[in-house]
Amino acid sequence: MSQDIIETEGVIQDVRSAEKIAVEINTIKRQTQKVMLSASIEIGKRLSEAKQLVTHGHWSEWLQQNVSYSDRTAQNLIKIFEQFGDQFGAKEMDSLFSSGQSNAFAELSYTQAVALLSIPSIPEREEFVKEHPVTAMSTRELQDAIKCRNEAEKQLKKKERQIADMEQREQQLQTDLEEARQDATLAKNEQETSALAAQEAQTRLQKKEAELARLREDLDNATVAAIDPEREAHIRKLEAEIDRLQKDADADQDRRVFTIQLEMVQSSFNRMMNNISAIQDNTKREKFRGAARKLLQRLGELV
Image (cartoon, rainbow, N blue to C red):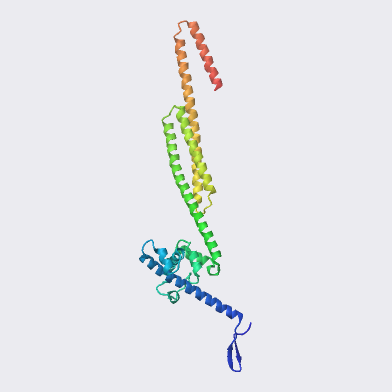
C-alpha cells in the first residue's frame, strides 16, 4: 500500500490513493445524509406550522404555488419532523450535529427515515434499527425488511387475539360444565324417575364434551409461544371430569330405567296376587299360586 505522505527534497507532499479518496467520499456522503435529514426535519417543522395557518381546503394549492411540494411529500416531511425531531432535539438547523450524543438514527438518509415511519412506535423503531444494518441497506432492502417485520407483528397480534378468544371460550365452557355437573348431581339426589330427563342430561354432557374437544384441537393448532403449558393440563383435567360425569350419568340412567321396569313388574305382580287371593275355589287358587311361583322362578333364572 502506498504511503500517504512522502518527503521530496525536504518538502512533504501528500500522496493521493484510491483508498483515501474512498474514505473522503464516504465521509462526504455521511455528512450529506446528516444535512439532508436535518434539513428535512426543519422543513417539516415549518410545513407543520404553515399548515395551521393556511385556509382549510387550500393546503394543496398553497404547496404547489409556494414550495412545489406534492401533498405526499409534504406529509412525509411533516412526519419526519414529528417522529424524529424530538429525538434529535431539532430546534436549529445544526442541532443534529451539535447535540454531541450518540443517536441510532443519526446516520439515516432521508429515504431511510421515511421508510422507518411505517413502524408505528419509536421504541419499536429503535429496536429495529439496532437489530438491522439499516445504514448499509438500500431503500428497497429496508422497505422489504420492514414489510416482513410488520407482517410478522400483524400475524402475532392475530394469534394473540385467537388465543384470548379461546381462553374466554374455555372459561365459559368450564362454567357450563360446572352447571351440567350440578344438574346431574341434583337429578341423582332427587332420584328422578323420568328416563327422558336422564337422556337430556346425557345429551347435554355429550355436547359439552364435543365442544371441549374442538377447543382442545384449536389450542393444539395454535402456533403462538404465549400458550401456557399448564392450560393443556387443565384441559385434560376437564376431560377426565367429563369422563367421570359421563360414567355417572350412564350408571344413573340405567338405574332409573331398571327402577321403572322393576316397579312396573312389581305392580303387575301385586295386582295378580290380589286377584288370586280373591278366588273362592281353593283348588284354583292354589293352582294359580303355583303358576305365580314358577313365574318368579323363571324371572330369577333370566336375571
